Length: 279
Image 1: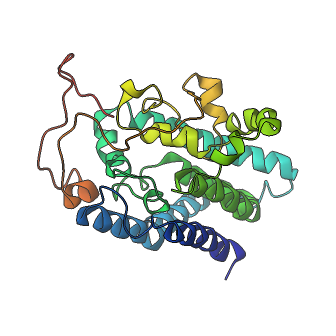
Image 2 (image 1 turned 90 degrees about the vertical axis):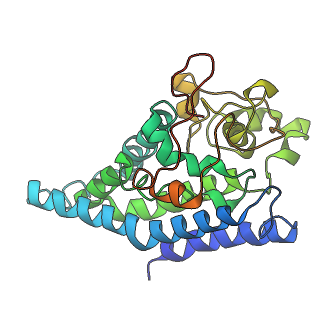
């Protein structure tokens, strides 16, 4: 078994244990039975079906389209290979994530990730079953693997998931560091480079009027730098009081997982504009 197949679950489990020790993994405020169903099914489907299928299909497609290109980029400098993943995986995921908060039908696929009223590693992989299958960055990562960047992807994926898992965790690792005045310059750089709990919690905040929530921004996954560059960053070093979706009707676990195959209600409509207004 490859090292990354062990390291990523180990990172996830470590944060889950830390949350459990703080009394916040198995039972979160506002948690419902539907939350547990969506989280278990979506996480299992991603690792057991969607991600392997997308990467395999992408590699197979590259082999059909460019049979002579296999491994042709393996000689690139490591820094260049990492840069390619940052652009074609992480930056592309930023734009996919941003688009998912602007296009109503895409938000219907992404809404399960925001539907929980809490932050936890439990929600890291929580999305509609079709969301990751359509994610361009996964397909592009498969193409880069075909071109010979597979071993770099292994290390890149571990670092990326460490940042993402830590940013979603109920254990807010950045909070005590903000209180240390000597670390303020370092934290200024860190919070503008990678996703941290304070900036990602803001993305999951429920009420835009609280002065912290920024669900129309803070889209970064590994790099928060994309938000800084593309003008969607909001940095307050505070955390929203409430997490969840604002002004939208409840939907059941089946619709969260299988929309548009299962629909129980029309999209939420903003009362002022009378147009779809995804959170």
